[in-house]
Image 1 (tube, rainbow, N blue to C red):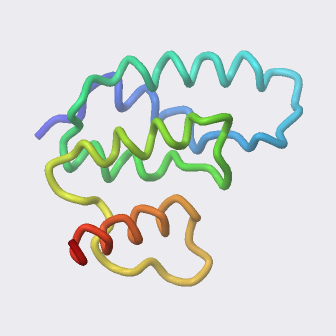
Image 2 (image 1 turned 30 degrees about the vertical axis):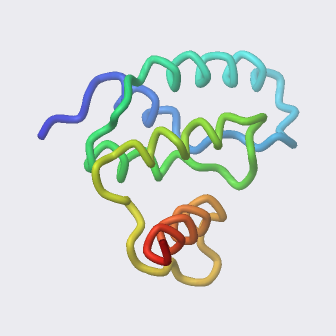
Length: 105
């Protein structure tokens, strides 16, 4: 299956920046990432979801991380189905916990 151009373009920018980032170009970067993120139509494929999980930063990124999480969870299968190792990205751990909650039903 092919990854859509919108997903590739969003992922090309790497992980979401931190809310603590005060570099000169962060505002323009955040605006661009928000536009790119909202350009990805639901649902994503399993392959796209796995790729998108690489884009989580360490914090909420002014709500963009939650938008990304819901996008990732729109895939047919959960992208995180085994317990992440200690020190993993907090959003990957969150995806794991949410997956575990679906099993507990």
